[in-house]
Image 1: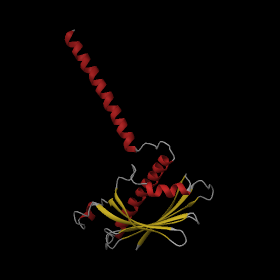
Image 2 (image 1 turned 90 degrees about the vertical axis):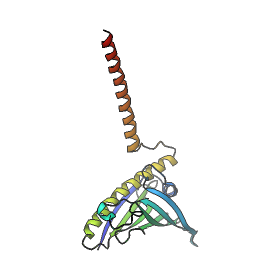
Image 3 (image 1 turned 120 degrees about the horizontal axis):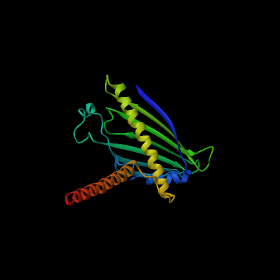
Image 4 (image 1 turned 60 degrees about the vertical axis):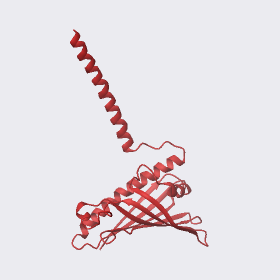
Length: 210
């Protein structure tokens, strides 16, 4: 049994910009789980389409009950294959991604199609499909639900990463990440606490001399 999921996304950048950002999106603040990326092969077809295959290494921490089925050195990472084809004439880019690690436990295949938005030629729309399956008898539903939840979280990070890279490409100041905002707030709180501590210490010293 295979669980199917489909969603659409919109990037307020041209198709050309999105295609360029696609190859430059790592690293970004939302892709800390991507450890390495390597191009296995790349070619231009007779119809001038660019075909590529990349190998990605990502952190992949699963639920604890799943880790018992994996060797220790494999429990925290996974290898992903990403095929892509860019058609400059049709103005489409299609990607197909699937995991080659832990595939017997859970297989996630994703297909994305990037094309010019019909309502606004300066924007790019993304149709995203996913198929999640497992060979674990008796736990297939739990594994698929876990896989779907993780996939949805990944999609959100992917879109934020795209927007971040596109902003940098266009010379804009990317919006701060949650981590950066939290860090700044923590520094502000620490500084305020430090100043308050100084005031209290000063008042204590004054009381001693009264």
